[in-house]
Amino acid sequence: MIPNDGFIYVTRLRNVGVPITHDHIEDGIHGAISFATAPFHLQLGLRLIDKYIIWLKEDL
Image (cartoon, rainbow, N blue to C red; front, side, top):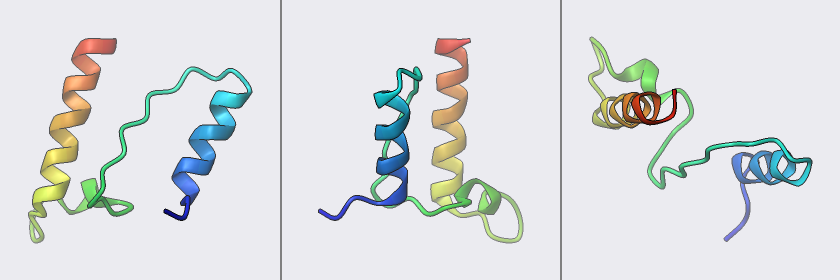
């Protein structure tokens, strides 16, 4: 697998001690949350919003 920018960024942050939560979404695309509402209703966007809300409830 060729590392993408997201993996490189996460690795660099961790290497310098920045606490980070990373959840790789295999079928994800940049900006998917923007497509969760009309007129698109992209299921991926809705999934990501759900994951984010769960993270907020658990970690804040």
